[in-house]
Amino acid sequence: MKCEACGTESPLDACFVRTHPLLTNTQRLCPACARLRRQRLVRSTYVFLLVAGPVCLFAAHAGGPYWPANLLLLVMFLILSVVPHEFGHAIAAMLMRMEVIRIRFGFGSRVAHLYRHGVLIELLEIPLAGFISCSTLNQRGYRWRQVFFILGGPIANIAISLGMFKAIGGWAHVSMADWNSRVSPGLMLAIVNAVIGWGSILPDWSWHTGLLSDGAIILKLLLRPLPTVQQRRRSHFNTRLQAINDAGDFKGAEKLILDWRDEIGESEFNRLEMFMQLKAGNSIAKREAVLERLQQLPQPSVERYWMLNLIAWDDLIVGSSDVLAEADRFSAEAHALAPWDAAIQNTRGWLLAELGQFDEGFALLQKSLKGVVRLQDRASVLCTLAIAEVRRGQYETARDYQRQARRIDSGCGLLPRVAKELESSPQVA
Image (cartoon, rainbow, N blue to C red):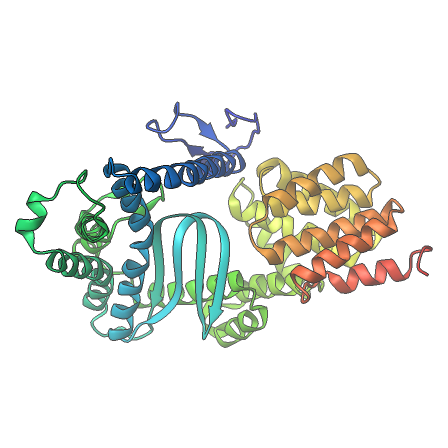
């Protein structure tokens, strides 16, 4: 398939995103262009709110009209009411003795995060939705505990709505309320929470987030067979591991993988161990097992390009000239499958710099730097840029990239490699 915006081609049709016809002409976009379009929409919306907000408040202060200020309050409360919704889910999960793993506010790229006591809390760029991951290894009453956990969010919003309606004088007062007669924050808060609370119970699919509504998830739980105990346990492990990795707690991830070694199987353990070793800046210990797994994936797929990229990255970690040919072959195939992926751009760019193809290599590394989401990944790209700068003799620029990477993530696994490269350079004072 070919991206209709940038012309990027890939055989992985499922990775392309169809834009919604209500926002723009329907197009098939690669993930990078879809993310760029979303970022432009977000920036335009924020600029509009920054301009419209003072205008609305000034109009209300000057004696009217009041409806623009009320409309602005409606938008603000629409954003803020996601918070009690997600915490309602979390409280319900704790009452059901479930483990809260991740709470996400918004969708899109991550802006900030907090990791405390095993819970990852994330703020994303578009704060108009939310998501929460909970799990449990206790299988007793699994279906109904899940239902109560999902109902916790709508119940929190409905409770706030009913409380605000009562505070502003009841339903009779609401029916006579005029948006243009006064600024009414209580009414706006009540309306927004009523819409979110009751609306989230409707069984639908949200096109702008790609997530099922609370009502759709409950309907699925009630009407479809439950996953097996083994599937639930594996889902628990995957959810925990993904959250720990996204939080940058790689020691915690290693411990979790070791604890579950017997259950996930030797092949999966080897694959995950390989991933953790590369994150730490080390070479793969069980390379044969990884290559064997790759041979089982002959067709283009997300897992194949991911495995190709990991092995090529391992070749670069090893650093010897006799494995660069393999790294070139693997990274080229991975880049052909997913040219938009920042991790693949990083690997391919580093490899091209090692081969002396600096123009193409640095172009890919700069693309990767713009495309990464997590700070840890940004530090990794800065380290590869530093190594590439050493290759072409730009040692001061390399030291600058090294300082930036250390400032972002002092535990980045590539920092020792960068230090070693700079120590052996002829320009060290």
